[in-house]
Length: 390
Ligand SMILES: *Cc1c(COP(=O)(O)O)cnc(C)c1O
Image (cartoon, rainbow, N blue to C red; front, side, top):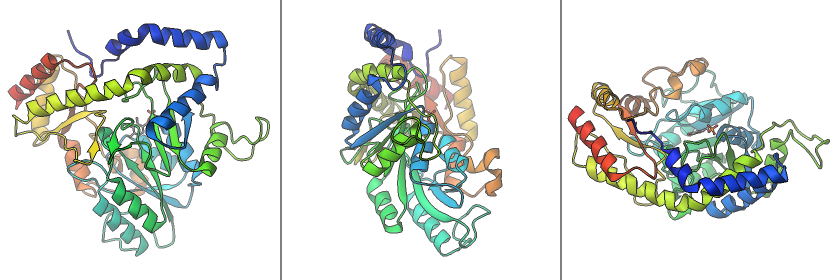
């Protein structure tokens, strides 16, 4: 018998009748596209994260695309972001014709390093190529630095006081990629509330997941939400046969909104359970000093999209993963290849060694099964197996 990496079946069993009733309601009213559940979800989630507006859309990737489009980012523009993230974070920048500029991460939180961020901005402003690695096409005046996309990696928010200050000072827009952090907090404020636009994902494996693809943008800016609403539906104007800009078809299905509304009812409890599961892992793995447990600064909470440990080196990680695999315990590596080394970004001209922290963490990190319903017995078993391998 093997266990799942993320146990969506146990969750489904708990809410099965409510999910079915909600789906039934949609099938009966028949508003499959932009039905009442979509605006109900937008209203409930903006309330949850405490922003003025929310816009449901077709995926976390489309949320990022809509956010970049609403901020008018395209060819000739550059956006700072981390190379230690899911591909979509930087893909969307490049997809719109802008240039991603990578900034290395903090070795403890794995989030964008504030010092490296400052250094990279200086390097671009003063054209000091020696200060840090820059994409090959960055020449004085060749790009205009427009925005920062932060990523709340594994569910842990970034240091938003510092990052917001830098963005304000440098006149850059901030997009928070909160695909993994819906439900987390920084200084008592909820993730998804820190960017000029914040984006999340409802991919099934995320902390709040639907049964397909889905995403959301959050903002406090009325002009931005109006642009987002238009961009989501083919750049529509006053009605659907007036088009005032080029947009996309980026709507969230009513059925997915109905599923999310049901899951939202148990979400606060699930966040608490996730934190208990992570705490139990922490207590177990503190007995194993060979591995580094995840660090959560005192001013924030993680929603534990992943529980990730650091091995001492690549060889030790291989040994651990092989042993767990043999015992039918699933594991994952987020992320083995930092984005600056992905083939798709060859054209940026980055090379091995450019972002040493991201590269080093990528060689050593691995993630264990993580979900609200993971039992203490199973966690102890997983711990003993890791210990044997170490
Ligand atoms: C999952 C994820 C995305 C993309 O979300 P989708 O809904 O899969 O399109 C973007 N950024 C990060 C950091 C993610 O983890």
